[in-house]
Structure formats: structure tokens, C-alpha cells
Image 1 (tube, rainbow, N blue to C red):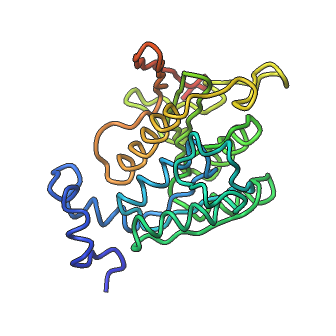
Image 2: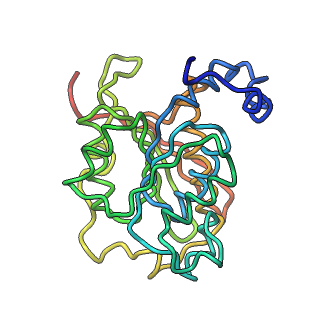
Image 3: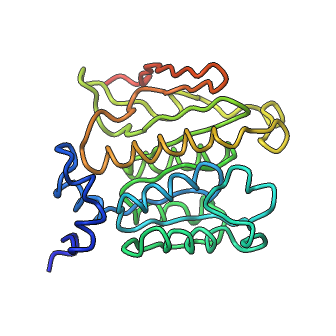
Length: 254
């Protein structure tokens, strides 16, 4: 039997997807067969995981070395008050099992490092960056590029957020290589120049907006629906209720 075949229960569960011509039964089967790794079960990772599980992505990997704390709950909606003190990956896995028992969740209760990242990335079709530090962002971007694994990366701070999709081994319509993360942000900022969310604050609902948009990009990438944010940076200003899209290009010569 085809592992991506949909059961009668799944056909009912995903009925609103299947009636969409852009998704259909074939697209839903692609989601069931997909393997997506989510970096972080925090503010961004929470909505990403919840919506991808609900959408029927077959295997979700989640890596996080932290435990749930009370200050997380203002934005990390995958966790509950009862989960305080529990490993975030376990709390997230419990929540996802309640959302959709058809989804397999693989948990990695550890910090992403140069030593373990390559192996983890190589097991997945798409990686979603929900991390909160520049070291992890650059490590992920470099390794995803070298392993030719699509990266959906997002960031938030105070009232503003951004996201983009990276496939630097592919070409755009002009035959130029698509940009890398370092084409967009050549070097990480100097230590101490960009305050963390703990220092500067972040409005909780903002992480929901950006994380949900990241999940939408993953669904588009898996099913082939629409145009992913490759070579485009989406910016969101929550106070002004304004979205802007900036095109950016690689600095390499094709």
C-alpha cells in the first residue's frame, strides 16, 4: 500500500484542502509524505507546528533544548500552564498528538550545533527556522544551502517581523542563482547590538502572524501551490498593520 495514501478518516479531516484545486488529493498526499524539521518550539515554532500538524504534514521533527517557563506562555501557544517545567519538545509533541494523531512527531531535546545539524537537516525535505539567535540562523542557512534543503526562515522583535524562503541552489526566471541568507544579511550583527526578546520585549500575537506565514510557505512548497517567498523578504509592521515585500538578489554571477 502507498504510504501516502489517505484513509477514510484523513479524507474527511482534510476535506477543505482536497476541494481546493491548488491542493487536491495529490497535494494532500504530498503533505502526508513530507518531512519537515522545525527549529525551536517557541514563539514561531508553536504556530508552525500546530498548523503543519493540522494540515497533515506526515512527519514533523522538532528540536529544542529548553523547558517551558511561565514567561513563554504569553506567545508560545503550543504549551499550557500545566506544562511549566516540562521539556518543550515533549510538551509540543503532546499538543500535536491531540491536534492530529495521523502525524508522526520526532523530538530532539538538544541544542542545534555544527556537530548535529547536518545529520538532522539531511533527514528532512524542508527546514523551518524558529530560532531566536543569530548563531543558529547562520548555521542553518549555510548547512541548508550546502545540503540543498529548502529553508523557511523568520524573525520577530517588539512589533515587527519578517520572513523569506531560501533555495540558493536553484535559479530565478532570469537564470541567475537564487540568493543565499548571506546575500540578504552578509554578517551577523556584533554581539550586544541587537537586544533579545527578553530584553526588548515582543508582542505575543506577532509570533502567531509570522509563524503562521511560515507554515503557509511550507504548505505552498510541498504542494506546489502559489509562489514561495524565494528572493523576496516579507516585512510586517504590526502597529501600522502594514505588509511590505522587498526583492533581493544574489551577489554571485551565474
